[in-house]
Length: 321
Image 1 (cartoon, rainbow, N blue to C red):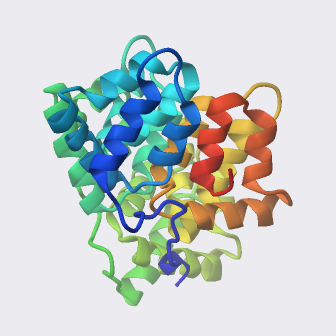
Image 2 (spheres, rainbow, N blue to C red):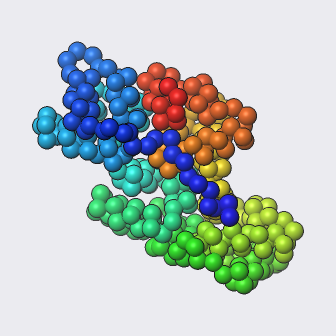
């Protein structure tokens, strides 16, 4: 099944790792007049998150200083966003992105979708627990105060862990679910949105892949084509994100990276978020997909869009200085 692509990261643990040596090298790069940004990139963009956590502990115990605070005082702008993002444990980083998307005036629904749609139940649980710990507020409550309607109900289902565990598959049920989706959309006047978000938030990704195949047999068109004509707004965006993640998560992220760099201006927040959060999961797969889809490398696209230390840090994470 396509969902079982083999995730290939671009950032892996470095061999012969010495947290103490790295901590002292980082202090040396920031001490005195001026900062050696390249040394910071060479160390932090080439270590796994677990290794970065060890460096941070060593920095504190040996030097009596807070590495994140030192980095923040020496770096600035988008380069700082990349490096500080790398220093956070993955679920904390995603929680920060969710909080930022809901904090203040307005809500960034696009970020909520991007962070939550690809997650399995196990990953969602980590995020939910971490969010409450970080912000002393349940994620479900915060989401409910910032969203409404079917979109809110879908996100709530995702974060309460309604999805069946990975590997849960029932071929007979898949045919039935495909029929339910057809009857709720194409097969009637108007659309019963509830059927769509209930099935897409409950079934395992493995099960959904079979449901989508059954839908094509039944309807003659893909689930994406059907949803495009039946749904709209944030609910459509969220459900189509789930469909894309079921069929091929790297395709979903490659498309979003392209969109972040397409046209005038760059959506740096999205660019940073995807590259940082996927670097230890499947960024190599995303790179391959990007090149296949857009006939150019992700590295060359980032080089054209970004500059300075910010560009160098992203390129180091992508793989290629």
